[in-house]
Image: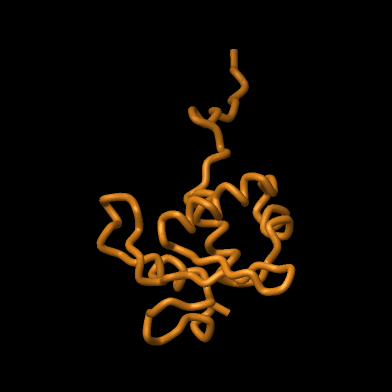
Length: 116
């Protein structure tokens, strides 16, 4: 008697990803420093409130600065701030962003930037 072969299910599912929502928000703001929270939320698939909380975290930790320009915000990213996890603390956030941004979008000097 032959048994039908079934596909083994992934023990922990297939919903995990390599990047956190904090990284996704930072990348989105690096690509468009004047993006609205709603647009960032739609782009990465989270709520606008989640984006607001993440932006507050990133701002409090020194990764970005929010400047009010008329009715919009403009975000400036400090590319020199170290990544938070001890295993990556010897790398600045600019290294991560450079991986996801086009070469011409990344400043040569590595200082703070609007990443635009």
